[in-house]
Image (cartoon, rainbow, N blue to C red):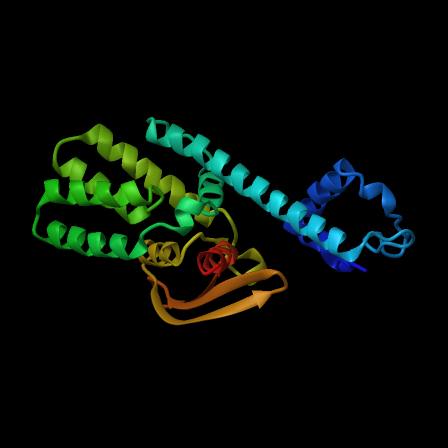
Length: 257
């Protein structure tokens, strides 16, 4: 007998997956063989379906639901990203980050390559090679268009090269991405942690705010996992800042499957 945890409705993703699963069960004529009690509506009570058939159908349903939501992330990400790349900077940057951050291309981005390009970009900036900085920053954006450091450096290099329009555009994108993190939570506790889609975003925020990291630890509050950053702020005061890293950990799990 297949029993689904009674607290499934507290998990929005699994709850939505089960809704999709029920539709598939109904489509193949299996749903009508189930009867639900008021105590546990996820527990079959009367006529049972052979275990192998039921388990296989449920797995297929869950897989299809997962694929469906992954496709939705890809679709929303592409729609907003195409607007930004097309020149529009008045977009929902939170939706852009949180949808793109769950796509397959983001999980599979070549972070090691990005790190190397970033080091070369900083070296070029220190040497005053603005054209080289522009080229390297664009290379990073080709791999990850949500990289705020690349937008900042590209804006700086374009300004130095006399392209004020291009410079402002990439500055607007950087600030839009940055504000979407700042507005995603107060950061005062894990439940209200600022939502990030990779660890680099945490360090970018701390750099912009002028915070010096003292200690970092991973904590949780129910279904939310956070990085707790203990920092010294620009005034020399100690403070704690929480970053919601649920998406980061989701991507870690996906990358090792």
